Figure 1 (cartoon, one colour):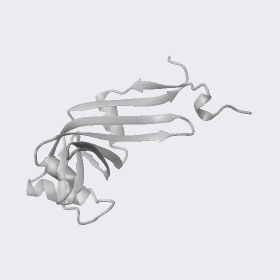
Figure 2 (cartoon, helix red, strand yellow; figure 1 turned 60 degrees about the vertical axis):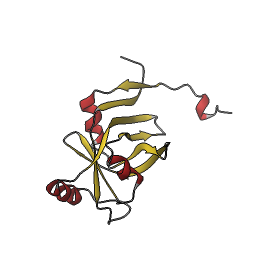
Figure 3 (spheres, helix red, strand yellow; figure 1 turned 90 degrees about the horizontal axis):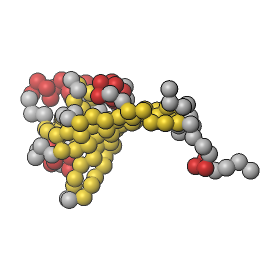
Figure 4 (cartoon, helix red, strand yellow; figure 1 turned 120 degrees about the horizontal axis):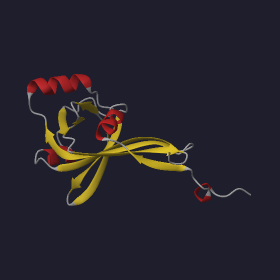
Length: 145
């Protein structure tokens, strides 16, 4: 009888990423999760994103809890990853920064053209998350070199 997956010895390890590498990887995926405070409790929402000039751009609708936080320039976290459970390899990136509503008409038009919402095409509001703190890890196989 083979051991349960969680009992097997793993040769995977975590390697810290540089800020540049973490942001590069973040730009290779379209979906992530934004974490913020909603009614004094933690909230996490899946959203698709665009990375532009080192900032994360997401679209939302006018009544969203995230937009309400962005109106107050709230600190939020954004996480995205690409992990293969079979090989136990991949990466994860977390960005912490201030979320603000994009108000400039030119920027709004540009972001609306570049980022199509996955859920509701009427999501006309745009939120920018400034990448103030960026951390990331790569899960790799094998012993450290």
